[in-house]
Length: 274
Image 1 (cartoon, rainbow, N blue to C red):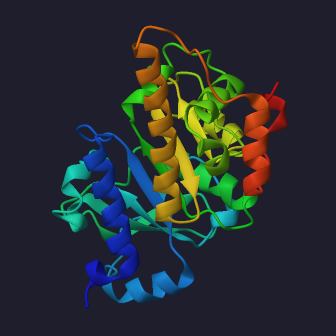
Image 2 (cartoon, rainbow, N blue to C red):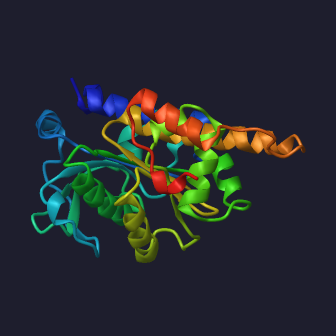
């Protein structure tokens, strides 16, 4: 048994490959990080480097993530290559006891570093761990085309996007009853977009980055990938409906959204309803 035979690595690689086949990861676009459980770390520890690589300060601090381990895609790596050569495309990093630095303990065998957006992921893991009482383990960023397209035509507000997505596919109020956040365009990879996304992720499981992509979180790979997939499919339905040239003639009414929520036992964000 090797590192790549461990269940969590298989599931991580499958998610990355699924995202590539959805068309969400052109070139080296997108990234995904997973916070390992203690049991998973112990399974992997025999395969860690004999000598860990140097500590790297992230410029941000997440005290509630001190001592944690993450799987991350590598900076500049292509999702389409993850399944072919995981040890070149991925890495496992350890967080120090101050919660402000990481070091690579496995992977990126030909050199490199975690995704350039690792500080954003790290800060948002910290926020989502606090918001979910530790349940959140996955942060996933991709470039789904229909969601991005909507950022050119809809008002860039949480309410506008949440309502359009809820009303475009019946399962949406069930899958993300809290709605979605929207972050205006910012230079990717920097502190500003990281902080702005954190503010949204205190309230939402998903944040749309205007003219850029989608940032989602969840407790496991299936739930997180499913959230990305559902939001993008709903956006696609809206784009298809609008492209028919007749405008929206009928849709799910607000009281019908409330009825869906009641039937499935979820709480919609009432401030987004009329």
